Length: 119
Image 1: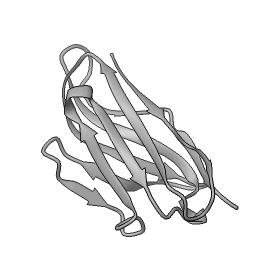
Image 2 (image 1 turned 180 degrees about the vertical axis):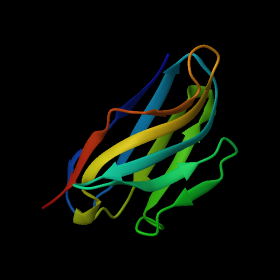
Image 3 (image 1 turned 120 degrees about the vertical axis):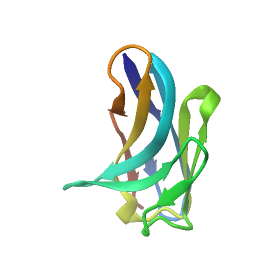
């Protein structure tokens, strides 16, 4: 099976920076797209995605402030968040589109990590 575990998160003040990461493990043959999503009360929204080739996509609300990256050898995706705003407060989830050598292939999600931006 495949598991995704997120690291980082917590309470920061407006204008500060934070880096979170997500490591995938298990019966992974390869990972196509990895991404970050966030959920405040309401629906889960895309934050950023990155393909195995490094092509990135960002939500308009985070362009220029957030940077997504990945280490394919470690099956890990990172999100560097700068100039954080109170409206960035949410639970952040990572997602990976996994090709598994055993068990089901498809989308896997992490458990989520809370980020609160408040003075």
